Image 1 (cartoon, rainbow, N blue to C red):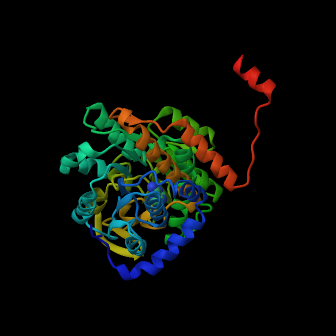
Image 2 (cartoon, rainbow, N blue to C red):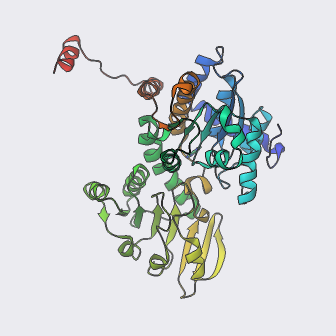
Image 3 (spheres, rainbow, N blue to C red):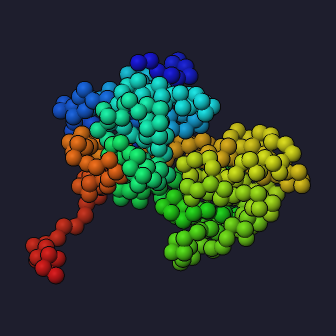
Length: 413
Ligand code: ADE
């Protein structure tokens, strides 16, 4: 199999990024060390559809070291880092992704990666599973199972499973504690704000930030905005989450009211049209819009464009929408995942844990996949506990254990 990448001569810069990430991924490295002789994925073809950047590269290389034949495709056209893609291709991973690919090239890359004829897969957002079930059905019977990284992907998979359309078992990596409690909350919280601040060079302190959605991602975004000195407004459609946001110290109101107040807006709902015409109509001149959800559907760009006289680049990764009424609103990263389209994704140590959950889940599938139903299955609790324990070790943190008396008390309550 050949790779489809931009330019192999970019490999040295990509290699530096891979080296930096690997140095800060102790849990992944421990997995590698533990299995590098045993090679549990020997003769196993694994397809990965993830953001092609350095941490993902370390995952792909770890799986290769554990014996797998690995093909990697991008899961978002703006998150692919061409230098990392080149370094990975040089290191023997089959890589299919080019930064800025249009929709056709993006799909063609995923389809081309499937020449690897996978037995195990890792998906992020559900596009790989979708294309397998719609355009490459002849490959379905060989697949033991797969892992899904995100909330959005799991929603798509659960809809498929409900209609009995899923052909192999999937593992809900996103739902593991060692994934969403850290990655969705602290990973997005830090990386989205890092991207917004470095791309805009604007001050967050004293501004009004509107966070749409109070799932784990929204919680992280709001927490970090508050710590940066912003006044935070949360919008929700779920009563309990709205109440939680209120008691966490944020203001809560419908977007129709929040739209007129925000300086920065970040969507994190997984749904479409969270920001739409009725909201754009009342926004302040200069409002900055970004999205932290998986797909670029949360900000309705068509409706924004229809209200616009002219769209011009304002800075790298920011477009100015000069509206017909004289106001300007700024859209970051074309409304795609702001932390990856305008930045480098989650912090390395966060992806260390998320990708360790991926490896733990693939090992589980390798052993137990044939006994699992073609539905969305949980990550075994032991995987979560093992990863948390390795992570604590890597941070030189110890915890308490129960005494004999406590054990007895606990079990005979
Ligand atoms: N880097 C690789 N995958 C990522 C993800 N799902 N979110 C943020 N950063 C990432």
